Image (cartoon, rainbow, N blue to C red; front, side):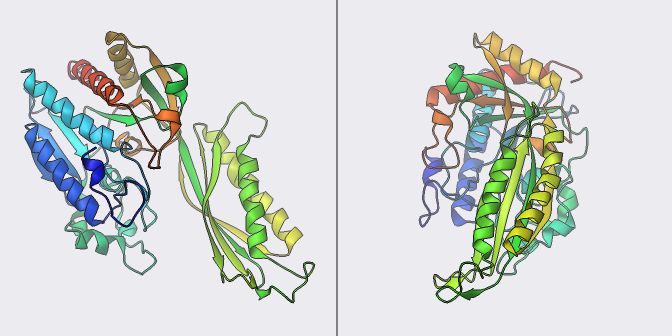
Length: 403
């Protein structure tokens, strides 16, 4: 609750976006809490924030636990934050109980997990996994500033990108505690979920080129209205996400739409849409691209406009490691709770950490499935239960030689 009040004053909800003053201030507070839990605090060249607890056998690879503390615009209190503060609480519990792990414990607050004005999410976790390239640093925002320049202005050292890389096999495992952002746990009355797979995401930018005309003098039959075609495109994405007759399923969303010239007395001549498809099935995702392009070709011919699509990213589904899923399930059973297996429709830093070692996630309930909004809520006792499961899982994994 305290961290949520560090927010951007001119934005709705509990907004703490990358590069904002609120985000910078909040992470300073997180660093204080890390130190208060007995962790050695550090930052890397791209701005990831870490707290380390030494293990009894320092030569062993670390157990990494964490998430992120940035939010979407108009976001909530719990998304990401639960994973970071829960990991700090985990470290405090270990120290106060007089326990000593064999492996070092690394608590991570990864930089900029949410989408930003440069169009690239999960900046910090991409960097440690070697998936943030020098080319990404040249991405520009709407004002022409590059991502590298913005990172430098925020006090990081993007020119030393290689120093942030951990390397494959450099971690014992990665765990992330997160709110579900859906209703499965709530509907089943379960308090803890074991994530089996994180959905893949394919994103496209769709551009519509029509003809700009006077809205009062151009007849309906003579119009080549880019916005009307864009509206049909939104419905096309919705229709394609409703299934193709197979047993596989996914979702589709158009979350952003820009219209040109944007005047009430002008027939729109251009429109740009940002669309995405998500699914835990690689095959389902693969079939969306040709289906969308075929639908756009038919729509353009029928309306006399030009439609083009650019697929800007395509991340396949990411499986959680069986060894980590088993450990989480055993830990939840140890707590006397049922372990519900779940698919994550949202993406997470865990996707990128999976390239470095075995990865797993624990879900706790979200009231009414709400997330990415001010109404996002998880009860404090549910958070505490999640941390208890996190602790029990870490203790199990710490005793295992190979995962």
